[in-house]
Image 1 (cartoon, rainbow, N blue to C red):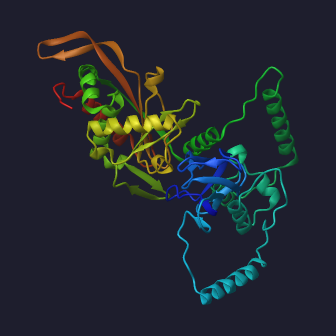
Image 2: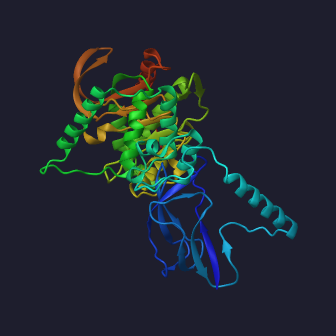
Image 3: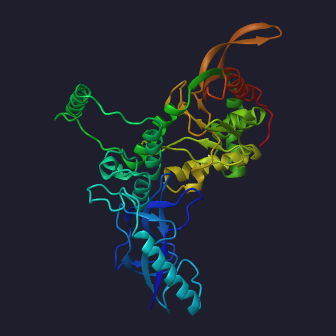
Length: 436
């Protein structure tokens, strides 16, 4: 019998660790090749880790809620065959190399014995801290008592790397001042009142799940970072509606994909971003980063009520068929919790469809580190003035609002307004004789 080491796979350039949320197989269970063994969660998405071999699970190297680094062995699977194997190639080394490695290990042990003051050996706590968080705390001289007070956005309130970096940044920028006794008393009373208001016998207290905590943290961070302003444009989409109604059946038969309004809007937005590249940027301190690629984020509602934003990469290089395939595929896999970590990263501009829920307009919050987000309102039949060479008259038209939120630190009203107006112009100029 051979033993196979199942390791945590690489899940994108910016993902270095994951939290085990549940084991789908227990010790002694038989596992088929490509069968899911456990579920993990990163700061981006939840996913499953499949087995690369067929065999029996003989060891779980980590427990639920523990944090695992990419490349670490998370399980041992016993298979038919020879010696121990792993999901990584094992290199053979000569005796001299082994000696050198042993010396390096001894040196490392000696260096570890001398550590900086701080939290090198944190006291035990009812709260879990990953080795990475503990190391950051030690290096920054954060005491255990101080660490215990940091709000965590991870699963069950776990403190993540981003929480630590955000805390350190605020700690450096604004040194804490000791509160006076009256201030402490007021704070204590406020806390007591808050707890009383939320913990009555008639009310139900619902713990936020991991994703909702991440969304909450992300939204607060965005509002605190960007100076949000909005521009609104009403657009006549009668030509778009009539063309889609006439084309959607043939489109599905020909391409095997449903034709929704979303890819049509995405095409217009991608064109407008190409016309106004300073909307396709991000901000890093006092520097503006102008993005080469147009990667459109597509806000997608999940069955749980949460929200996720998969990304259509190089959207300006896709035709309508390609956009329809991407939109349908990403939306389906988002609802099935099958997105890969890379598929929710590197967006340069985001679109959210508030009209799906009947809203005629909205004021969406910018998806950091982007500088703009466009909300698509509901399409409605309304009476409108129609201008013709023979004169104006009233007619029934399909109209909708486009709500554009943008970061006033780097996007002025002129650019923000011209961009959303250009999107409207592309939609109003839709060619009703267009072929797929």
